Image (cartoon, rainbow, N blue to C red):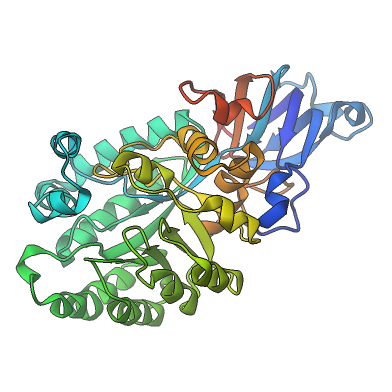
Length: 418
């Protein structure tokens, strides 16, 4: 398919070919071309520039040619589709009853102790068939695509048995075949401790290392491995063991860290060269320094802090210290039942005092880095996969996080297809 988009009010995230990520003060600047064009062919970005250059460019010949879809983007912004690097969107059913418990004053940890939370989702998932899980997940993928997401990472972790963890990851593998979105799979067997392993958590860690990881790797079901390294979940020592075992099977780490306390999870992730460390509500000077000395992407999940009424990560301090920041939705049934990355951008601005430019970087180029797809996605560059969002008519790109209650995506191109 050939697509020529003309008269773009502003083409965002151009000129980043030599950047893997954007950090610190650079996050306050959005590279853009005003009054621009973009040409897409065979699923890839093949050229772009200003409309002043268009008449003398080799792309003029495609205007009016049969078989070329032309789009007039007058008054509209064009940018890379969102890269959502942290979700749990394969799950069986919602948990709105726990939502009511939360309204009545129970904390996340209190709900978990009553058999709710992750263990509730695990029970449901163990009973669900692969077909049921695929059908539910496809609906969620279609929903987020309509909101502008073009790439998504999906974690296991609601299985908590070898059989069910493998079932989840097989579902993700099938979703890669059925959905046009770019999908990455992460094995998160260390998401919680099953009830049958109460008071013998190390035995469950042994199961993850001795049985789950070899089987996941044997079927090539996961791109990454993750551990919930936090108070009440998995310790630094247990996380070390799991990540070392994963590395032996070629699984790069991504870490749930410091959501509930200063857990040491950030430092563990840095030591293991984790692609990202995620959540980070509890992040101080030591954690920031460790991240500055690494290539690990700090990934913030403001949807979870919003839904659970927790303190937000110190995004402003992190960026002002020179760090890059990515943001993701944490789409899951218990702590962030939304995959709306436009809302995530708004929360970044409203609750974490990030600038519009900073949140755009956080959900595009930095999000692509955090899920390992930066070579293909996250910016407008020749040769990259054409995952592109065309906004409706908006006055400025700051309108994207400003108008938090509306969908600003008018059209979404995934892999060069409308």
